[in-house]
Amino acid sequence: MTFLILALFACLYAYYIQLQEGLGVTGMRDYVSWGMYISNFVFFVAASLVGMLISGILGLIGYKWIVPIGRIAEIIAIAFAAVAGLVIISDMGRPDRLYYLFTHGKIQSPILWDVTVVTTYFTLSFLLYFFTLLPDLAISKNRIGHTPVWLQKAYNILSFNWQHTPEQYKVLFKIIRILLILIIPTAFAIHTVTSWLFAVTLRPGWDSTIFGPYFLSGAFVAGTASVIVAMRFFRKSYNLKKYLTDYHFDMIGKLLFLVSIVYFYFNINEFLVPGFKLKKMDALHLQALFTGHYALLFWSTQILGLILPMILVLFKKMRKSGPLAFISLFVIAGAWLKRYIIVVPTQEHPFLPMQGVPDMWLVYKPTIIETSITLGSFILVLIIISVLSKLFPIIPIWETAMEQDHSNDKPLGE
Image (cartoon, rainbow, N blue to C red):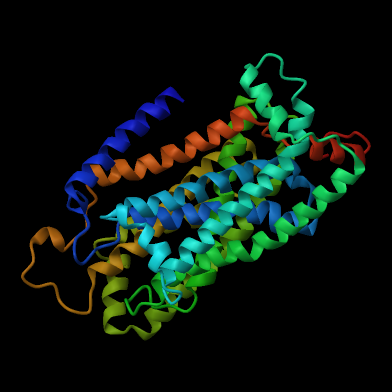
């Protein structure tokens, strides 16, 4: 935490410089006006959807293997959704005018839609996390004598006098089910609306009717990989091998393959259709990706961040804790770079030629200030995850106990 906080202050100093000097300290100019910040925003929104995927879809279907990893997914969803809004502020030259969005926002604007669904999704994710935490707080408040007094008092206050009565659990199950049902369409909306920010324009590379499902499938890949890395970390650091077993890594590895193959299909569709028609501006865009300035980045992202991991997780040995987490790191890196490839290259091929402008405007190059602020958002996500995982149980106590009771006291996952 000391390292993270010191690093965060260094990144905040970079943001202070940006506030003082303006967005000119970044690599963004008149043509490429969206850079690392918007790429980061799209990635954060994507990773936050894993809470809906794990707790919402799989939870409602009835898969029991998600019980010990559900809270990890919810913490990741809260952290990424919370910081996603701050990432947008970092892209604003005049953040002091943010309130205009709420006082003068127009319903016709996709920007307003995006702010609305991000806020709603964060609220639902937080409520889902908090309500499932209530019984655990009541269980733990009398069993944490080694912790500071303020934390014991916080447990006592936040548990809201939970007594573990059947009536309370009946109400809790109803609330959780309502939240799970609400969070699914909200999660679909959050990334669909984000895709519309691009798709409603006529720019080559963005003018696509499949951007909604394309972004959603990519979001599931990024989010699942993030949960796998977190599972590995908590399993090793908190000695949770009894709860985060090889069975759970095997199952979430299969889930990673499933969402990856769907995402791979949309990648093929996204480039095959414009490649077949090959309109002039689309041809310039695809040439830059396939053989031009962005070819190395594009093919590295596709092969190392999607195709190769997808092949590797087919093998059972690769769905173990260590190998799967290592593969997931490549998937996460590829997911972020994929958003960068979506956002930046198409802006370097405007319909009107770039004439009479400085050479530095022709190609987007992120600056140290821009990179530092981007890293700061990741550091803030890690701080939120660290705080929540340190202060509150990372494994759902009451749900795990209930599941073990239903399975005749067998270890969870067997």
